[in-house]
Every structure is written in structure tokens, then in C-alpha cells.
Length: 522
Image (cartoon, rainbow, N blue to C red; front, side, top):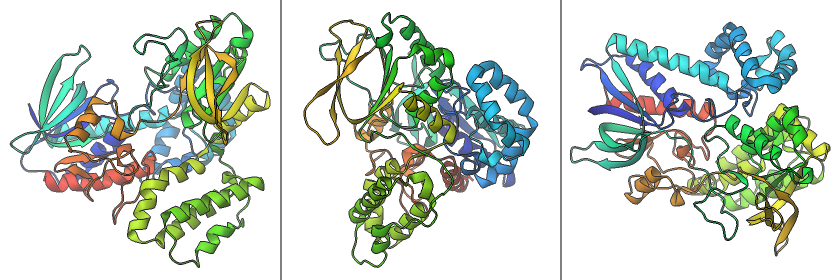
């Protein structure tokens, strides 16, 4: 069958775009009959993506407060849904979330009673439920009105090939590895971020053999809750209490989420001797706090205001210098986040067009790592583990895992401490290793779809190596559009983002794509 439009991936970026697109069609319906729309999803759960669906935990929280998380266009509708459905979702959360859910409810009870939802870090699955309800209603309306038919396809898109007629043939593989294909006039690539960067097995191990220790390469596949259960089993099967250790590679939001789930589950926490987190920064995301230093002076950045001729690299290194000074004074990101952000935006505007683009491409994601923030509940849980001596933060460069000479079900960590050279072996052994090291570079992606798109030059990798270059219409090639995190590094007169994991940004980018699709499919 030939489709007018096909979405590859059905997560939040697809749902937002399709929802807005249907609403646009309702206000100005086509006269040529219903559009045929295909939505291809390899995991089978539509509209939620990884973060807001069953692959996360019902206890997984948004990383910022609800007030900062939700787009103004959606806020009234979402708040109404939260309040109207409160008894139902709280009951479901309590049954599925256990001890952690009860702690969350107790912590946020007064906020909810005072109707102060903006201050709450809500469980992410709530937004997934809300958006799923909205998009399903929109699809039903579209089909009843005869303006669009939406076909849900459970399969993995592995390749895209231009046809002689100017459309695209999309190669598919289903759960049983059966291959087929569909053709679409327009394609939206909305598959989320790239794949996780894998960690090499211990030296001498067979790359294709399941290791004797528990290695979790992707915390959300098949699901976070599945991995929590596997971790508990591995700990129970480790006879020596001093060896019941977990090694986490990376200190990003995923690692912080895992630490939160460990701290808030007493049965799991009691089994663990120590959690070791290694990263090049040696830091977890900063705690979101009140802006307690609103008058803090960034001396060197302020000096750039009157300087002439500084470039993107100068700006980034000045940011680093002032942040180092602030940290030495005990002033952290949460204390002065907003004035730093405002100051950097002001200084970016003074760069030439090419140098501003250079900052977005080369330094934007590095800047984000310096100022990463996370909610109080997540960050406080990690701090409790640190204060109690049950967690260790290592600042260094991961080198490799090595098989323990004592027990084959455990591995050793070899790393280089920050500012040093040579190899250090951590004194603990680990029956559990969790990879939270981030995503692959797109140029070296192990995804067949991404590597094929790059090889065929249908998509060109941008300077961030996390996103594709697109036109102002969000096209990577004619009639091939990008939506979601793979727009990281987008830079034009209308939109400038070095990362697009933010829900508000996805909502705004969906408006642009909806406008373009509406014009071309009218």
C-alpha cells in the first residue's frame, strides 16, 4: 500500500506532530479525500516513547518541575487531566510503584493539596497516559470526519530508498524477522535519540557471549523494572556481602534515576554494599534549588560584554573559567542558573552568525553537561547514598572491565583518574555493571536505519554528531523530515537548539513541521 505520510517511530515527537497535524486538518480539511498515514513502531507501544511508557518505571520522574516541563499551550489541558484523573492514576501508581510510589505521594501531598503542581516532579508515565488519550481521540475524530486514516504498524524500519516517482520505499522487519516494505510520499524520522554506546566486554571475553556477570547495556531495554529485578537477583546470587557492588558507567540523568530507585527501595538498598559511579566529570546533575545567589557576578563573562572579537571557543572557555571559580566559592548551578543562562544568551547574540553556529555545533552540548540540573527528589536520594557511604563518585576515564581472578561472575574496573596518566584498578569487584554512558555518535551508529541513511547521503550528520542537518522546513532530503532529538544542533533564523530532549522544544518544533506538512499535503 502507498501512504501519503509515514512516521518512523511513534514516541512523543511523533505524537505531538500528528496531534497538531490532525487539529490543523480539522480546521482546514482537505477536499481530495482522507490522507493515508502510517506510523511504524518497533516496540509495539505507541505514542509514549521510552521515557513516558512501560520501558521506564511508574516511579520515574520528570527531571525538572512540572512548571518548567510542560508547554504553555498544553498546561491547562494537562492540569485538568491530572486533577480529574487523580484518584485513578494515584491508585494505579500505588499498586505498581510500591514503596517508592508511597514515598513520592507523601513527599508531594501538601503540594497537591495546595494546588501547587508547578513545584512537583511528577511521574513521567502520567504525561504518557495524557498524550496517548489525546492522540487516540484525535485519530478517531479524523477517521470519523474522513480527513485521515492512521495505520499503526508494529515493525522495525531498517532502510529508506528513494523511488523513481519521488517517494520513499521503507524496508521493514517484524518481530519474526519477516521482511517487507511500504511506500510513502513523505517520511518523518521520529525515532528519538541514537542508540546507547556499548561498553566492550572484559579482555579475552567473547563479544557475542552472554557474560557471567550482569551487564546492562541499556537501562530501558527491555524495561527499567526488568533490570531492577535482574539486579536484585544478581545481588542475591553473590555470596560475599562485600562483593555486592554495582558499577555505573556515566553520571547522567539515567544513572541518577537508577540511584533514586535504589535509595527508595529498602529491600534493594539493604542488599547493596556499594554503588560506584564513574564519569569524566565525577559529578551528578546539579540539584535544582531556589536562585539563592541572584546577584552573583560572573566576572570574566561580564568582561566579555565590552570585549570585541571573541569567538565561540573564547565564550565556552570563559564559561568554564567562571563556573570553576563559582564552584570553588561553594556556589553551584542551582544557585545562579537563570542569570548564567541569560548572560550566555546575551553573549551568544554578540557573536557573528558563523561563530554562533559554531558554538551550537561544537560547544552547546558541552555547555549543557556543565549546567545539567535535576529535581530535588532525585538529587537528594543520591546525596543520601553518598552521605551514608553507600555510593562513591569517581572522576576519571573508563578504560576497560577485567575479569576478576577470584570469581568469574565479577569484573574489575580499570580507569585513569582525572588529571593523571596510567591505569588504576578499583579495589572493589562488581557482579553488576550498568551502562549509562550516553548515545553513540551518529557517524558511527550501529543502527541499520541511521547508518543506511548516512551512507546514502539522505541524511547528513551535523557538528554535534547527535543530530542531522536540516533545512528551515526540517527536511534532511526532499520530503524526508526529522523530528525530535535527532534535530540536535538545528540552527537557522527561526530555530536554534543544540539539543532537543526538552518537551517544550519538541512541541514548538512540531508546530513548524505541522505547518510544512499542512502546506505540502493540502
